[in-house]
Amino acid sequence: MPCRTRFFAILAAPQLTENNMETSLIILKPDAVQRGLMGRIISRFEEKGLQIVGAKLTQISPELAAEHYKDHAARPFYPGLVKFMTSSPVLVLAIRGNGAVAICRNLMGATFGSKAAGGTIRGDFGVSNSFNLIHGSDSPEAAVRELSLFFNKGEVLDFKRPSDAWVYDMSSGTAE
Ligand code: IDP
Ligand code: MG
Image (cartoon, rainbow, N blue to C red; front, side, top):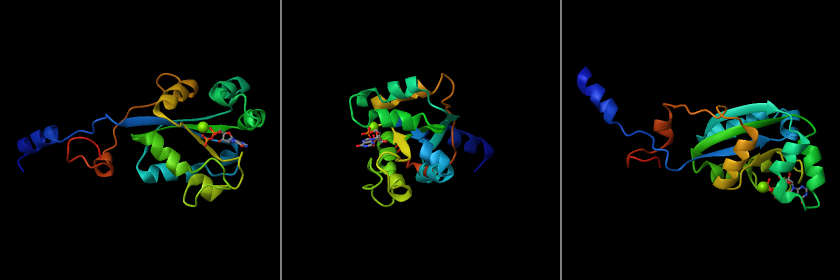
């Protein structure tokens, strides 16, 4: 193809539209960090085709844990949950993709490690019901709220990956 034609072909190539793009808040909990499972868990998301767009190793304050888990404040496990989440550093991630919130929840598996299916993160790496390795936003609305709790403006990045042309079928002009 002549150079000039190739230039216009590139311009005309369908770009990844962001209609269904979601960003989920994922927290690798203290047990995942202490047990040296961060890399293996991150790989699950990367291998699926999702994009890591934010990452922060941090220790959660009791105030932040209370805000994050405020919907659970009346539950009997709440005091133990806040104690656990603030006991040691966590890795906070922002993970993006088409339908990323539900995809992340599927990769995580059911809440209790004792019940989570094999092949999921909780099913493969743990047996405990409270030390269950990972948090993931449970809806796009929750993701927006939770991301704003853990990331400051500018800490969740927007960058292109050429390999997305092979992650998503772009033949209809939109990512599928
Ligand atoms: P999720 O993390 O799968 O969304 P939630 O019901 O939102 O589950 O509960 C938040 C977290 O609280 C769980 O991930 C787990 O660490 C803890 N948790 C939930 N239910 C129990 C329980 O019955 N016993 C002990 N810990 C629990
Ligand atoms: Mg939840």
